Length: 418
Length: 146
Image 1 (cartoon, rainbow over the protein chains, first blue to last red):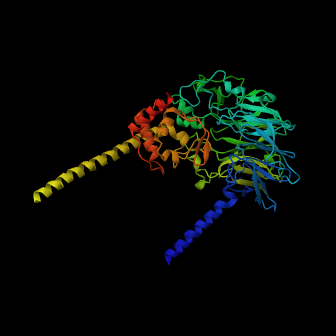
Image 2: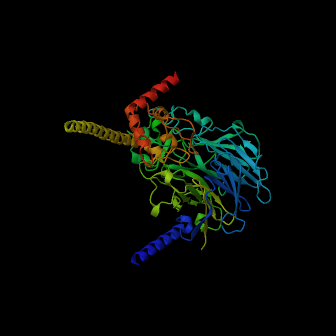
Image 3: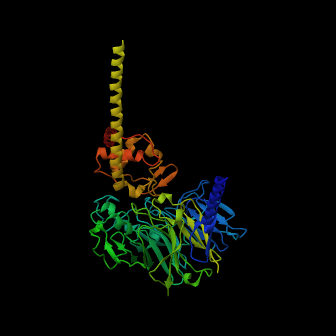
């Protein structure tokens, strides 16, 4: 009898714990915020975009089990959970953007444009217009994130197909190429006309360079400027063990967030940003010794984040639902590191970057955490074990924000009420 | 008759003892290989393939439970370790994009050790890899290149 009571109480306890764990869909949020699962298991979801009627479009990294790589989600009964879900498109990729009645999506070498009808259904799922094509896809850093300015220009990230522009990529002792030839056609942000069909490199303009790989970019409509978040280089300790310890590599270089003006150069591959020295340091592939300072011509970051966390999306918050401090500040998602090993991994959260008078203050704070689903919020040791990895960000009509997961494809909806 | 059967059993005992010693020795050698293989794994492989051999989604393929790693094509594994790999890997329904660093300085016995470790760690229970298998694989690769 005693044993039975014990068993029952253990079961009850486990049940209570699982209910508590599911509160806010497992997320840890600031006071007053709540979260729920808007959708789950739609397939690794990269960027997301929301239409004027509140329909969510998610770009999947690769086609899901049903063979679809763009998913349309609608919450018809308005209970906060998607109830009408269908998909189309076969191409792998990351970028998606809604501009008026047009839906833009990127493959790893092109940008396509779909038309939406009055119900925000895609009119031409099989026959999109090709806006840009022929962009470099050499596998590494091949995703083409996209955003628009307040006119009709589209900004496309073309990531560098390299870690540090060595003659032989990721090879110990291989020197950095001078000048880095990759920068002619990658390692920067390109600007195209979002309304014109069939553009290639020659129709676009290199808007900013020296950016190794940018997943997160967004236009700040308050100040009319582009902001981007760069994935910093890897493996300083693996290739230069005489200059960097495992512990130093875990903190170097910073993941950097920039305010971008046309023509800016963020310095990849020649320099990286050291957050403890607050300096741009010459890369060891270019004669650096972990201390030598790089050229002042390279852009200063607006915010420096801990190393290797992998910033995936940036979203300027323009809604009115959240407390006033969030207005015109930026959310930024980090889907979590791998190159901190053998030390524990970092990231797997959404952070908030406060802005004052149109400028980042340089501070940042964790906004939503717990995506990785570790017990008691323990650190992730092995990246593959993280349950969800936050990636895409979008703002809903009511001022809630949506966060996608590029592991199994959950979409979280985060709201605030007083 | 009695004497004969004792001789037989002594013979049998010696044979058994020899076999036993052989088995213990191979086990011990395998264990030594695994220890050495673990060291190599930790310095050269762990960062990308992670300490649980789980890899990194979309970037670095997992080793734990991977059909290629546990499979029979030892030569392919040997050549990937020695020469690196720069193609998109399709593995068990997923794709991985990062290039793998070559290890031109890794000797035949070290390649055998690290493969033995990887094929017998986490949930992997594939056979050990011998130095002669590694040598044969590297020779075969040279012949193909010519």
